[in-house]
Every structure is written in C-alpha cells, then in structure tokens.
Length: 507
Image (tube, rainbow, N blue to C red):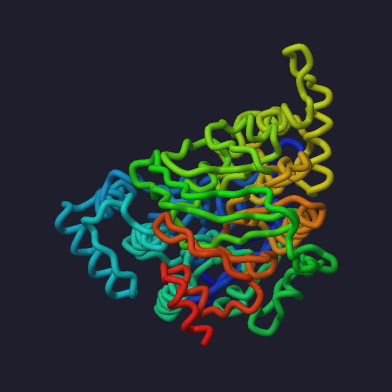
C-alpha cells in the first residue's frame, strides 16, 4: 500500500471575479502533519472545503487511499474518513457536551453509551472532558475539545484543523500538540492551517504554500525559519512593525469603577474596572477567551450600558451615551466577531462602511445617504489596507475572514479616532497582514490617538503595547509597563493574581 493517503491533482475552482484555486496539486502521507500556508485570500479555505465536500471543484481530481475521492457533501467525507475542526465552533451553548456531539452523528447511540465513549476517547488522547457539562459553561479551550472529540469518534484517517490555536492559552496549545502527535503516531494524517508560523515549525513536517490560489512551493518547516515561510507566502520581504515607546500625553479616556452585567446567558459580567489611557499610548489587555473581553468592548463603545461607574472621554462624561454619540466624539471600536457584529454579511462593503462611518465621514446630506462618497470611502479602505476583493460593491460574506478583518480595522482607523478600542485586531490574518495592521495601529497612536488593544495573542500585545493589563473573570488587573514583563508575570496576571503576587516574581 502506498504511503500517500490523499493525492490532489490540478484542483481548480473559480467564483465570479476571482479564481480561488488554480491547478492545485500536492500529496499528504499517512500519519503526516502537513501545513497549508498562504496569505488571506490565497485559497486555503476553498481548498479544505473541497476536501471536506463543501465545495465542488470546476476541474481536477482527488484520490483517498488509492480510490477516487469526490465527496458530494460532508457526511460522505466523514464516512470515508475525513474530519474537520473549523475555526468557528458550531456548538449550542444551552446543550451539554454529549448532546452537542450527538447532533453531529448520523446514528448517535444512547446518551449514556455516548457519554462513556466521550470519556474513553478524551482520556486516551489527554483531552479531559465531562460529557454532562453545559457547553455555555466551558472555556474556549474546552469547547475546542468538544469539536476534536466529535471528530475522533469518527476514527478519521485525515483530520483538517483550521486555525486551531487562535483562542487557546499556551498551556492548552501544548496539550493540543501532544494530542495531534499521538494521532499522527497512530497513522492519522493532519492537514494544519495556521498563521502562527512558529507553531508550524514546532508541529509540522511538511508545508504546501499557496499564493493567489496557486501552489508556489513547499518546505520542511523544521528547517525553515518563520520569516522565510512568511516571505514565501507573500512573495517579497516581510516588514516588521516599528514603534517608539510612548510616555503618553494627557489622559484621553478614563474609566472608574465600571461594573456591568453581561447581556448574554453565558457571558462574563464586568466588575469594578478602572484604568486610564493617554494620548499616544497603547494599552494592551490580555486574557483567556471568555473572561469579559466582548463585554468590555461593548461597555466602552456604548453598546452595553454599565450598571455602575463612569467613562470619561477627554474630560467629558460619556457614561450614558450610546455608540453613535460616542463615535461622534471620537471613541470608535472594532469588535472581535467580524461577521454579523462588525459587518453585515449580505451587505456590500460600501454599505458596511456606511454602518459605522456615517457621522465621522459626513456620508449623509439632508437625510439622504451620499452613496458616491460612501463608495469612495470604502474604496480607500480597500486600497490602503490591501483588502483582496473585486470592489466595494461586493458583499462582506464574499471576503475571506482575514480580508474582512483588514476591512473592518481599516474602516475604523481611516475615521481618525481620538480613542480606538479593538478586540483581536489580527485574528485569523496572515503574517504580512498582521504586521500591516499592527503598524497601522502604532501609526495611529504616534499621531496622538489613544488605543486599547484587547487580544489573546500575547506576542502581539508585547510587540505593540506601552502598558499591559489582564482580564480575569470580568476583573482587570492594574496596568503595568509592558517592557520587561516576563512570561511568569503575565501568566500570574492572566490567572487573576493580585499585584503583590506579581511583584513577588519581580523580586
């Protein structure tokens, strides 16, 4: 029997205005951990959706285990041994773990029998999980375990993983990698998509690199630097963000004693949050997913009204103002959930520009929208932030996740905010785009704006922040200078340690 598990030959898929995949060919061996790399819009999502049966190619062929492989839908792919863990979890918060897993099975066993299988598999692969726990009470890492165990119960020959560590702590990443190595040793092949190139170097033995829908090369990540892989992806030199540490000017945003109940059943309420951000300063806020990040952005943007506390912008109390009045005064925000929150999927990019930029870009006249000006503004975002799309008339849902992220961040930055609050600014974007977004944020701060950057990427926060604070169960630690903070100190802050405990590590 050949060592090749999946062979892809000449796959091509075109959509109106764009060729997503063009003559793509490569092989994945049994038990191989194979990386699929490329910029946002390079064609990775279309390719894995084709492998999983969600997309029908225009041309080309695949073989799996030496047999012709042409899945008409995902359940056919699963039956033939192909499983996929998506970047966005498809779980119901109100159901327990076993109920969620049963929903993904064609012929689920009785709940008691399924619960035993879940426990057995979770223990075998070092992913402890209680089948009776409600999903809404789980951390992001535990939710991912549900998705992985759902796949493992299918006994897959090929496991596709799309950005699997984007919401995980370093400790959870270590556990995940141990699980994937065990699967690989047992003969399961893994197709791994990630923009975190150091993770690729740690885990993967081969990589296929896509650029503009075509295979442009391959490498052994273990023998290739992260910078070299990034430059293969972009076809040029990777620019590293440059920054000058800021002492900060006058206080632009002041938050004192902010408390607010979460509007979501499984959300995290904010508890007595206080901090200040000065002109020209970047305040980085870290935390494991689900510790109040969404609620903090909503409270600062005005989407969620606080129960107690005061928010002051440039000396003016804005605690009772909604999002539009805050925007008019210069406080802008870009939430984590880009599709459905930051952007309306079926609306064009021009219409999505109108959603947040009407006031600051003067997009109305006598109660009527100025469509020409709105289209010009959307086009400028597309141009300046290298958003890969045929034009501003295209709907948001037609963009790859990373390109939509660039549009959302660019839309806010080009409105020249006094204060910008962003949650996960480079979530799901490639190395080149992440560097460009971080540089744009630093340039905004250098121009005198105050920035609050909420992120689960600690490397990102240490790269761009002047001060760092951690969110834990809705409480914010005292901000500390980012320069010189150690991994141990950050770990303590993320875990909710008090300042004296962190200070003890300093000594």
